[in-house]
Structure formats: structure tokens, C-alpha cells
Image (cartoon, rainbow, N blue to C red):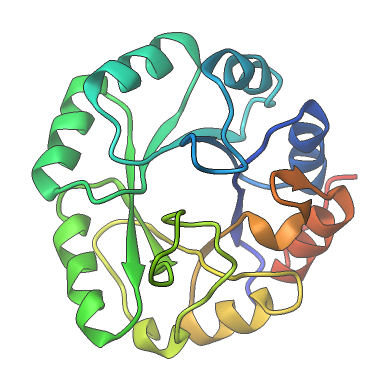
Length: 218
């Protein structure tokens, strides 16, 4: 079982969630800027939460098809380390955002079947990281955080020219299997560690990180 797995906990909305992420030993703390999401936070709330994220934990802003005006507002107010583009952003848009803001870009790509895997190669050429996520169900309001997974065998033994992260329907109960099947070195969870939509559960966060083999700090 790998022991160098980096964990991202996304959709943090409360100070106690940030504390739980830090205590569990996660590597990334994610904040959602998407009004339709139950995990959406205002820019001011995100700023206050991000300030409390300890040094060494990367602060990630998740946006969906955000224009420059919104990105300007977020990046000028919230101390960030990574921008996560989770919409239908084109490779050209990814390149523009990366150049304009000078921040590493994580591009999410939804996978449902084999033909979706090709897009990962395309985005790996323009992003600093790729997030391999489950494609949302038809008529889904949210592009992610739906608690659904895809057939992990589709990317088994696949590697790209940039670091990648596995997402989509991960829980404390299945993350070890997902890592074993895909060889993922990084995993992302949101709904899988929640007591209710947008409300993280510290025990589930701890269990999730422990299930990946990461030593818990406290």
C-alpha cells in the first residue's frame, strides 16, 4: 500500500473543517466558488478560511467556467496556491488563466468511458495538474461533488506528463481499492467525507486520510 499519497479535501465551508484537514495530514484544502453548489463560499469567507490553513497545505480555489472578473476578485482577496478549473474550459482558456494569474492550474476532466480519456492527454499539455473525475450524471446541476465514480480500470497504469489526481465517489471505504487499481498518488474527496452537503465530518476526514496510508499528524 503506498504511503506517499497526497489527499485533497474539497468544499470546505467552516473553520472546523480547515482544522480537521490540517489535523488529518491532508496536502490540499479546497474552496468552492460556484453558487449552485452547497459547498459554495463567498470570497470573504474563503479569505478568512484560507488564512487559517497551515503552511504546507496547498490552498485550492475551485471555479466553474469563471470569467476574468471573478478570477480577479478571488485571486486579489484570497491567498491561494492553485486554481482548479472544473467546467468546460478549453485548452486555450486554461493557458490564458495560467498566464494571467501566474498560479498553477489544476484542470478537472470528467471520465465516463474510454473515449473521455483522450481529453486527459490534451489538458496535460496546458495544465500543471489534471484531476481525473467522474463525469457528472445527465441533468446534474454540479460538475463535481456528486458522489459518483467511474470505472477506475479505464486509467489503470495510465500516466501523464504532469501530476494527476483521482476524484469521483471516493470514500473512506473505497479509496484504498481506487489507489490500488489506478496507481494514483493523489486523491480528492468532497461528498465522501460529509455529514450533510457542505458540512464536513472530522472523523470521516481522518478515516479517509488513514485509508490512503498517510500518517495522521494527531
